[in-house]
Length: 395
Length: 108
Image 1: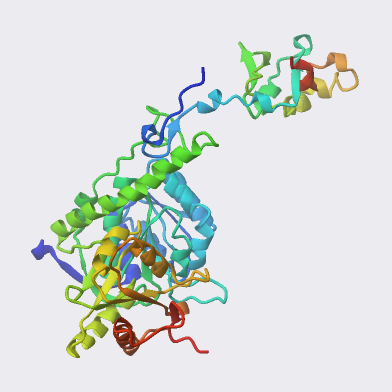
Image 2: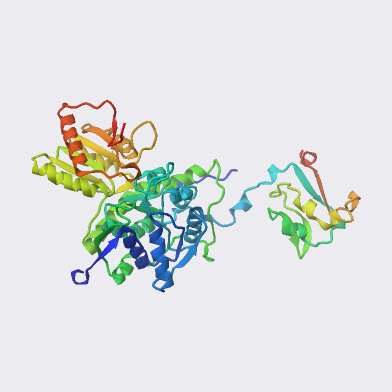
């Protein structure tokens, strides 16, 4: 492997488009939306240049993009699309259809906030809006992770027959250039293999009905099959991450941890913030503070037991949400992490933060002060009036 | 006897069902109007067979023989589109091949 290593400079969007080129899907149906436009645009270039065999469908909306992708996937193809923000909103009606029809569509998604007010920059409101659509969700820290996650996603999705969205933070990852290691084309081809759907519409040997009417007497049972698939997806993700690590030397999991082993205090976060947080951890460590970081990668299926195990020994935990569900509670990562910990005998003190809405930057110093606040919280030197703090919002 | 209903573990892993199951789903009892066939007036143009949304027109050897009342929902499209009903039968009901009647009359 080492002699074939190819290090190149790519933006997040370029990296995801490159992964799509190597996957060479049967069908890609896509509609442009900032900041995900480039993914389909670059891929369309690959189609025009004859670098892929893909049937590229230029559709009139994201609803149609997802519908065409679903149709092509039901017909037995390996199918992809890409979107962001309002585009994902427009796809929303079709997303649970893809998952409950058990179609292994892999979709690069670039996190951008949702309207109103209109804003093109990053937060996780878009993917969090569809977190209950039955799609697996992976949040990436950088372009390398996005590239690897798309490739792994094909394997995972096809094994468990569920769709997956792999997201990067809009502009922060999607448009910033970083060095990434590419896997040679032939190795990707060998790794993902040929897609063999269990059933498909264009198979005259075994005729099937897809998406038929299903009322009181069977809907629950059919839904249960899909629910069970999402529960089993954890095992498949674990196995596929291991295999990817063994093959290509980069091993992932539901979450990555940084200096967590002896930590008393930790931050739990997703996406590009985790890169910033690592610098804050290093600074705090130099000052003698036992702090660490948990970078959540896989939000769906939610790795509740695994997460509970990692955080149960901590004294205090700050949970960082880059979206607010407007639920009157806290952000979704905080709510679900707390639910995961409810039955644990030992759990850390928790305070959650909603940060960076609409693309607002978070500074290293802000994270350091969160670590200090958590330290005080753990020693009962600090009390919060509310369970959640809206980081840096002007009053 | 009613067929035993399957549990979720017995269902196929991905959501697909064998083709043609709508034949087992008897939708005829949704009907409030029933098309009654008068063979002697029919010219077997098969317009009704083309337009029926439920494939409930029974045709044998190119000739209409009657209706599949297990699946006919009584929408009346056949009677509405029948060229004889619209032509000769327009003013003379006795010339019509398809006459819509109240379903209640046929229930025991």
